[in-house]
Length: 258
Image (cartoon, rainbow, N blue to C red; front, top):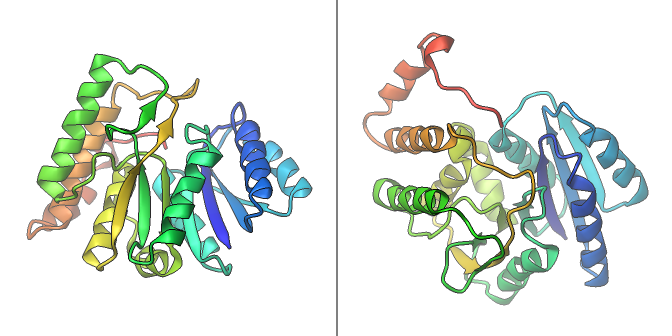
């Protein structure tokens, strides 16, 4: 069985189309799929819409978390997926920037190569197709960020942040208990832990479309940079700096919305 986790924070405008498209596609492919929607601290009508789909389709289930943050939502989703008999466990963004047929490409790659433990979609590969033209500022931000990830954290991927990733069950089972410190850099921390535990994760080209309502806040580049530096400290002899930061008064810390 295949488990697809969809973290959902205030997605009432987009989650309906995503769920319908994924259900229709995987039914057509006759794939035994479980779609687990993890609603994380939402304040809109997302729970009602997801409940309607869950009542209608056996393939869809959901949880509604009180805590926020995509990383926390995905970690809880992993735990729930591991309670099923899923051989493959992955996640995708709720806005359907990754179409179901492009997510299915990840499935076929894992099914056809037993030497691979995980595969991640990468928007910035030369053979990927991005349907929206990005601003020069956003392209520059992505280039600099990926360079920092390679230089500071030694991850040789062109895109760690694309919201479509899929892994074998044993890989998720191994790293899930280790997750929890990364906030916005959750994907990077997950990839580091997979690498450190000997799992082979590759990237592949994808088709990606930035959907209406998706945006990067002005604070996002700063928060991401701090998150990467925090990870670098965590995987170094200077881990104590993180402990000092955690002891600071809340007003001195940088906060964000999930």
